[in-house]
Length: 389
Ligand SMILES: Cc1cc2nc3c(=O)[nH]c(=O)nc-3n(C[C@H](O)[C@H](O)[C@H](O)COP(=O)(O)OP(=O)(O)OC[C@H]3O[C@@H](n4cnc5c(N)ncnc54)[C@H](O)[C@@H]3O)c2cc1C
Figure 1 (cartoon, rainbow, N blue to C red):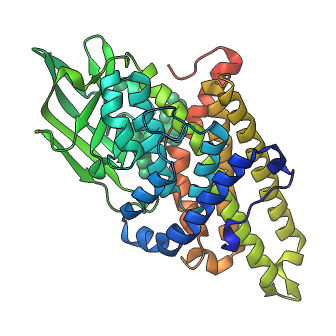
Figure 2 (figure 1 turned 90 degrees about the horizontal axis):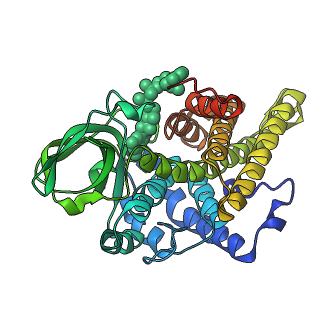
Figure 3 (figure 1 turned 30 degrees about the vertical axis):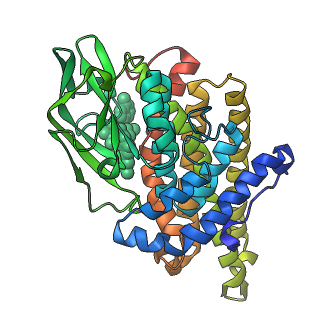
């Protein structure tokens, strides 16, 4: 096993995990070691997603892992979180794929679809035979999805969809897009299948972050949709926001994986690199950085484990998720930047994974509610005053 994937468990949190949860983590670790690490730098350099890994990820039950029924693994939320952690220890792009497939696309159908829609899509999505994407963000509306301009109007029994979505993970490789649109009654969601006349995608290139993940624009020009394309329980923005809560939950865990890889890498490096009279690890300034990293990773682990237990007990609030996503991603980003610094010039080359994680985490800090937006959500929670309406 790569030394970079080793666990960091200062407070023996493993004692709080079940045998199954630990086994799930080890299985994903082995998959990451065997299949992902050897090729992730190449995919990042080439701006490609390793699509050939999808069947294996499906085989391991990673898609819709915490959904019960419909061919999904039905794991608890600790196991689901550990999967996200280990995937992101390799690359945030891989975790993004799993998050979008599971927590955004499959969950959207699971929570808002008819039995017919669930049976049609979920089993094949769990098998990785169908890929999903989630189109909420638009070119002019990111943090404020309520401003969306994509519109669906009724046309006889069905609908006609017009508009554009931007920054959509998996957009051009998805077989089905969950598209959120304005309708006369407010907002709702639609299932738009690849190849629908008037529906096209265009990939976004030139990213310095999330390069091993596909990010696309979705364009809808008079796309005719049958009545059965609408997710009937998706009424209002609560529906997409409910999906985001699921995805943010996984991101809070995933960030720990990225931070842990950066910490492990920096620790190994400073132990072996000698400057002046001794290894870098022997200098107080370097130790202070390592201790800060250790502290923040450990705190993030504790937050996630408690969050998972609350989620399993049905007591998790969206604000708990905001707290965890905001804190864990921001701390992971700081850890990655600090590790990059500790590697000196070697910190800027892809011989080490640190700069890739650092750049990926810039996206993770922005998507699924920016750091500032989660600050506003928590600010509203503690004061009762919404500072962003
Ligand atoms: C690689 C990648 C993949 C993505 N994948 C998806 C996807 O699959 N599906 C999807 O729908 N979207 C996706 N997104 C979009 C992402 O969710 C948005 O980028 C995010 O919501 C922020 O929106 P924005 O980029 O328009 O920034 P803006 O909303 O314009 O924000 C810009 C800055 O202003 C700040 N800001 C905004 N509002 C306020 C306020 N009221 N007070 C103070 N500060 C404020 C923000 O915190 C931020 O710092 C992805 C983005 C990236 C980069």
